[in-house]
Amino acid sequence: MHKSEFFRKLESILELEPGAIQPQTRLDGLEAWDSLSVITFIAMADRDYGVSVPPKSIVECQTAEDLADLVAANKAG
Image 1 (cartoon, rainbow, N blue to C red):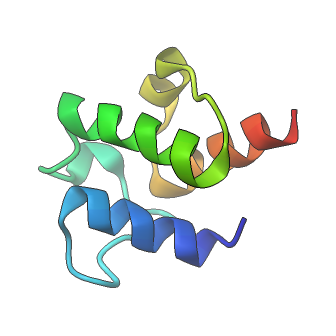
Image 2: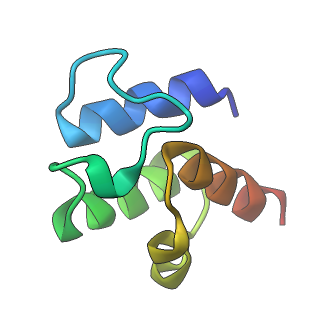
């Protein structure tokens, strides 16, 4: 998984401008990061990466990179 591609997909589901999401972007600082976005993120992870991401694990993520690492960890096993 290329993280830059992952961040572009995250920008898309959050309806943000290209380049708005960087690895250290804090999720709690994004107005668009809400419960609907979490559901959309879960669907994106399943559709695009073939992984089932536990909602409890998403809540523990603080940055965009944490989300990318979560998807990568679930993809690996």
